[in-house]
Image 1 (cartoon, rainbow, N blue to C red):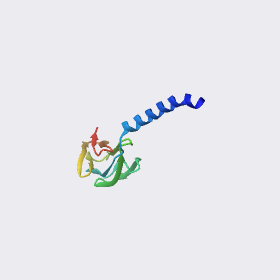
Image 2 (cartoon, rainbow, N blue to C red):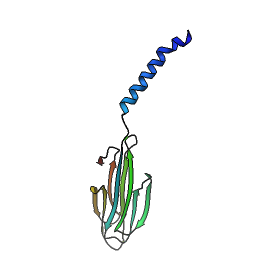
Image 3 (cartoon, rainbow, N blue to C red):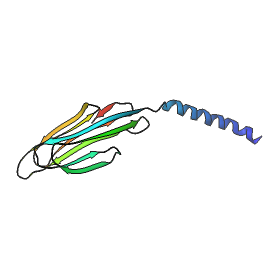
Image 4 (cartoon, one colour):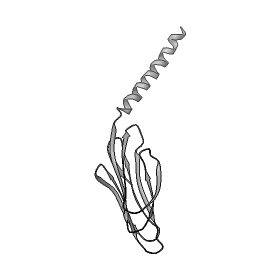
Length: 135
């Protein structure tokens, strides 16, 4: 008799699980080739960028720096926050710096700034459906 009393609860639980799985839909994946670039007139810049593992990396480099990474994003994951940022300071001159972000051969974001301690930033979100969103 006890097993029969659990039957309605099991049927309800089963129906809820089926509804949840229908709402989420199939999982898709999008691939991106991401190119970060920093150009400018400074001797060196401190650069931050997001790598393939979603980790923020930092390097001190000369302008003319470029980094290309491959990223895969699934629809059941949060978007990939692509980012490149360059802060440059030269006490002997005022310069300019440009940071750019390209995903799958399409320019996503670019920023140019000038002055001592200038920071240029380019960012965008890459999604599992293949779309790109900008800040």
